[in-house]
Structures are given as structure tokens and as C-alpha cells.
Amino acid sequence: MRHLINYIQKGKGYGIKKMLIISLVFCILIAVFLYTTLNNLSNRLETDASLNDMPTISIQNGQITQPRDTFWVKKIDIGTPLTLQIDTRPEADKNIPNENGIYLTSTTLYLRNMNQTQAFKLPTDDLSIDKAMLINMFRLSIHATVLVFVLSIFSILWLGFLSTIAITSLILWVVQKQTPKKIITRSSLIGWLGILIVDLLSLLFGFGLSLLTATFIASLISLFCILIPTETSD
Figure (cartoon, rainbow, N blue to C red):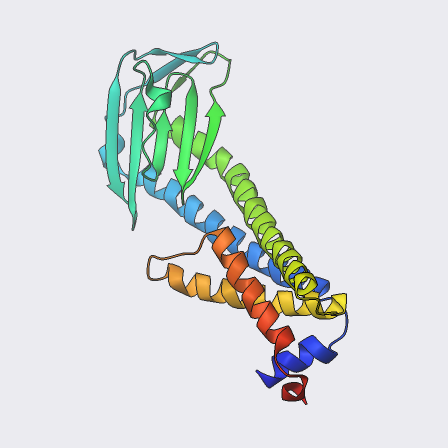
């Protein structure tokens, strides 16, 4: 604790570079993990014999023409449950399940993973899709899925950090506590990183904090680090 207080009170800079380095390293690790997971998934799908009865799909002008009014679904285990579904019935796009999986409707391919859903319109060229081609489409979408997810994580990290700075500055202004900006940003960095570590650990037990809650708690930590007696850091 003493080292953290010393950094906040006597450290150099605003902590922006530290936050940038930490967020970049974290996002790179997430990208590698997610890419590896999705790539392994595509390999598992390719070798799963239970998918051999998947109907061949005909597409014209961006829409499935065969089979029509068809519902086909398979649930496979790749370490976690995964749903594969073809639904060409009317209103299928309005009834995409919340389960992780690959969902194909008359006009759109949906990929759902880790509570993130990516939608890809079917190509306008005339073609037929079987099991092998569907897996190839999934592989082509992996890069886009990873990019969107990682950019979302990066944005959330910085939104939380900047929000913590703003809330801390606002409360200090209300209580009329004159504090240098460098101290505010450094204390906000400590508060935000601290609550992120707690949040990541809680995810292991199936819990998690919302961005609003995490930011609020991080701001309280930041304020505590600023308002504790100065002699504590000596």
C-alpha cells in the first residue's frame, strides 16, 4: 500500500503511458486466446461426423432458396456446448437463441460467442453450401470477430479509466479539495486497475461487475488513495 501511495503522491507523469501499455498487452492476450479458441473450434467442426447429415444449402441473390421452411439443429460439445442451427422458416432472424453457436437463417449467418453476436449477410452470388463450405465461412469470419471483440475490450478499458478520472475530479471539486491533475490520473489508474483485477477474479466464479458499478468502485478507491493522510506515504 505504501508503494502505491508513494506512486500516486510522488510519481512521474499522468499514468497514461502505463494504462496504454497495460491495455495493449491485455488486448493482445485476449486476441491470441480468442483466435486460438475459434480456430480450434473450426477444426473440431470439420472432424465431427454428427454433422454429415447437414442439408446442402442453395443461395441466390443473398437468400437461401433451398431448403425452405426447414429447421435443422445440432448441439456438439467442444469443451463447452455449441449449437449449430439452420432455420429458413419465416421470422427466424427474430428468434436467434442466446446460446453460443452458429445460426444460419434465410438471409444471414449469425456467430454468437461470449455474449457477442456477429451478423454476416449471405453473399449475393449463386452458390451451394455444404458442411465444408460452412466451416470455411466460419473461418473467414474469425479475424473479423476477434478484431471487433478486442476493439470493444480496448474501448471499455479506456472508457472506464477516463470515467474514473472524471468522477474522481467531480467529487474532489464538490468537496473543494484542490488536487493536481497528475495525482488524480495516477490514483484513478490504481483504482481502475484494482477493480479490474477483482472483476477478472470474480468472473472465475461466474460473477462480474457492470461498467457503471466497476467505475463507481474504482472512483471510491481513487478518492481513498488521495484523501488518506499525507504522512502515510512518508
